[in-house]
Length: 258
Ligand SMILES: C/C=C/C(=O)SCCNC(=O)CCNC(=O)[C@H](O)C(C)(C)COP(=O)(O)OP(=O)(O)OC[C@H]1O[C@@H](n2cnc3c(N)ncnc32)[C@H](O)[C@@H]1OP(=O)(O)O
Image: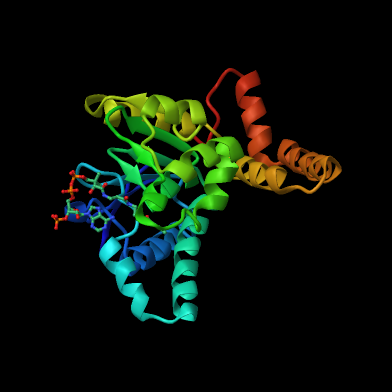
């Protein structure tokens, strides 16, 4: 298995990419393993959120170049199929119904930067760099582009995709790729604070909030967005969790999901 999985009593799952000797670069085995892992976590109703991180000094060095280079012996159709597996990985992480927190322990390059963009909340060490290096390798940040452009917008995508230049953490913060920057010494403690904040949300409300964002950003018109957002709040306020959350605040007690 090219990743490690730990699920604690609170339902916090930690997925750790585990190919440290290759800076957690992904090959077809790691891609397949991670898709299965995230699908299993999706089907595990006890999981409240996922932390995604890397073993060793890097978060993820993107695609394993030895593996990608070998793809020249494959047909065009096989190459397209293979790229679709990678797209599937980004999709299962990005669409994972519960929050995914990126714990960026080191550099995230190429497809590794794409993984960062798929996370809902990202805490990174100040020594990490993010770079969409693909063009410097004669390649393209293709499969990751929908996720990254949705996150940072066209202007930042043009600036970073076309040069492949390293992005410092202060810049990644401004771009909205990273939400918090800390030292490696404080990374675990900062992640724990973030986890505690996310666990304060009603479990079902957190899932619905993520669904809301995914639907609003993909809505074709304001009217479409208005219709389903009204539907969603109409259901939430009469639902058991909404009723419990409001009662708990009014009665000055903790809601029962804590
Ligand atoms: C569709 C998706 C496309 C993509 O994702 S394209 C790939 C984009 N990735 C990159 O551009 C990352 C390339 N790697 C690096 O820039 C550096 O490496 C690091 C910053 C990650 C680490 O640098 P340092 O600490 O100096 O270590 P080191 O000596 O460069 O690497 C140790 C071993 O790891 C191998 N390695 C690093 N990244 C990859 C990779 N992406 N694919 C295959 N091998 C990789 C190296 O070659 C080397 O190997 P050895 O020990 O045999 O010399």
